[in-house]
Image (cartoon, rainbow, N blue to C red):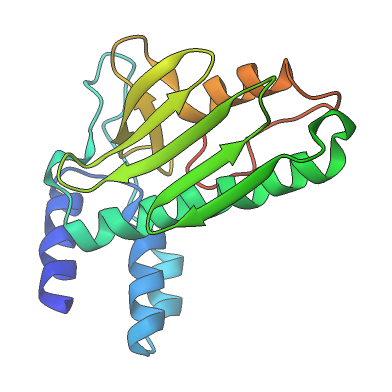
Length: 182
């Protein structure tokens, strides 16, 4: 596992990706090394970012790192959807389930069901929306990492915010979810 982690770190450092430090901190804290403070004080930064740069996607990232990022994203979405359902009176009977990389948000027969799941072989997150249909999101490895639909350049969290805000009676924002770009 550490060999894959360091292989990924060399690739990320070579490409100057700034998402590496938080991911490495999680891996090292699981292993129990004392280098966490050094890594936190010296995060890798994207020094060549400019608007004309091509987006760096997750095509070459190690599977273990990708799995961690997916799990963080889906778990934070699950928690936020549970909050939304608890606070919204028009969603009585709605349900959120998360298991084995599949997040299902059932908002009742009036609003439909959202399914968000990871696709490890493709290194994507897939969304099935009752409003906008199916979409496949790629991980962009800059600004902390976020999920983008390449065909229309709309972020996953932005689309969810726009669609869900039309359903619920409360103000919602997905910017506090992990790997969000809203």
